[in-house]
Image 1 (cartoon, rainbow, N blue to C red):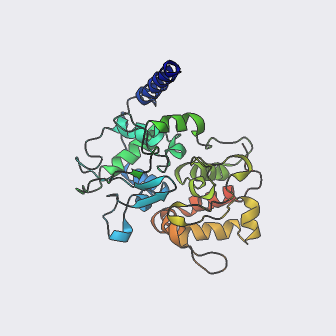
Image 2: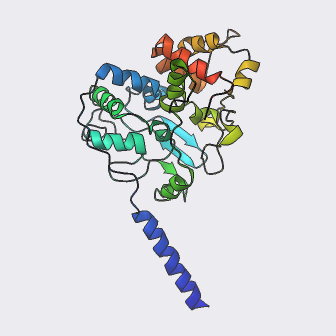
Image 3: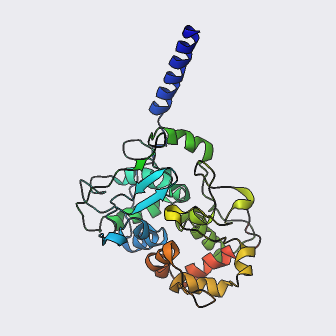
Length: 296
């Protein structure tokens, strides 16, 4: 019996070692494009970078990290995205940046926790990445160390995220759909991509992956910090009195059809993100979200 237990232990250990050593991601093609700072800053706003990577509760500097993200598996802290060479992105290359943003893989080859919404950024174009990179180079350096995660065992073992990715990682749903016009397609690109609305407004399973099928956009009662996100599928939005006009207006002002205003996380999304988008882009998002036949 001991011999069998020993053999099983050796096999399991070897398997875990293999997973830990298993490389993930693909090497991105070399990026040699001139980035547009203004366009990159716009995309960063749309992607929620400032809202997530600034510790507003403690008066933190913009994009210097430190904001706490409470999850059922432990606490995460948004990292420093300033141009500081020690604690931020100052020593990175654009290729490492591309792999982190589109694939969720660090320069050291380690997987990022999916609280970083990289699954929604997977279809960012090379030009998108070049523009974002150019914009981040203009962020003043802040010498603030990124705080490491405080995750409970076994979720503190990053190699386990490789198995999570294998089971749950999906490409973003941003491709155009036949028969839909340009405004709808732009809305899909933003909602399913940069703005990553489904990250909050879709429920999660026991392992933290977004639920699929009919649960999509049906709301989430377990947001980080104990908050909730309402359903934003078309029937739910229409039942609460939303229209394309009112939703586009709310994404710019935070004011809802009943005269109340967004609070909590959604308030930050508007204040630091969607309020900076063009009227056309906000209307595109509203058009897509209120379409009762949103396509594949």
